[in-house]
Image (cartoon, rainbow, N blue to C red):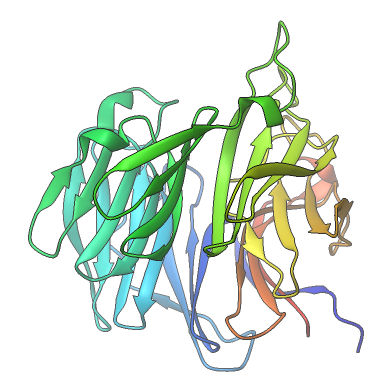
Length: 328
């Protein structure tokens, strides 16, 4: 069978906006319903791609899961936004509990292990002064050098990459240092706001950052930047709109980049490989499905994705939350 993206799970209403993998057979997906219903958590624990189980989750009606991470099947974290406060929740292998509430909005997070967790503030929503926080297993401490960072990706406790505005930041175990990549982003014009929208660290000499021109209304263009251990360079540019905050490796040297449409525009899952950006074939096509998150299944070239399908190309009309898998 030719590898392709195929729907493996449907849930009425809502959307799977965040998905993570935990080893080859474990995964979590979070369904952010319609803004009034509480988010739900779904667990996969086995090799069958369609076997997902809904697990009791202390979500609230005014929030959605905006990020998640895990170091093992008994150390899974989910982070909520949209509500006041935003919250950090933890799965210990048996139950979900609330570990911390924050007065501002969470934008992203990094989980290294149960005593090494980072939370980054979201600058767009009210309460943008959250800043960057670190959990050491006992205390949550605000890290001043991380002010303004929005999300990140970790290689180890002393090698973490993050982003904020036109900067890419690096944590060396002591402090955050920043490098401007403004010259590699789409040009600043009258009605756009170029910025870095995501970072993915795969090794010390292989770090990707995704930038967007953030043109008014539809967003774009999108650029792929790369760190080779010495300098940042631009590898590709494409006329795609606003990207989602959770990209993923394809396990073959490339990337999967979700590009949700805005106000009914077409949505894409873009594949980056060898300097090129190409829309992937998705069930139903770009008018009928939206992908928000992608996660590589470790040790393979298969991946999971979360999003929703909608009738007649109209998001919000008869939406179904869907999970997909590539490589089956």
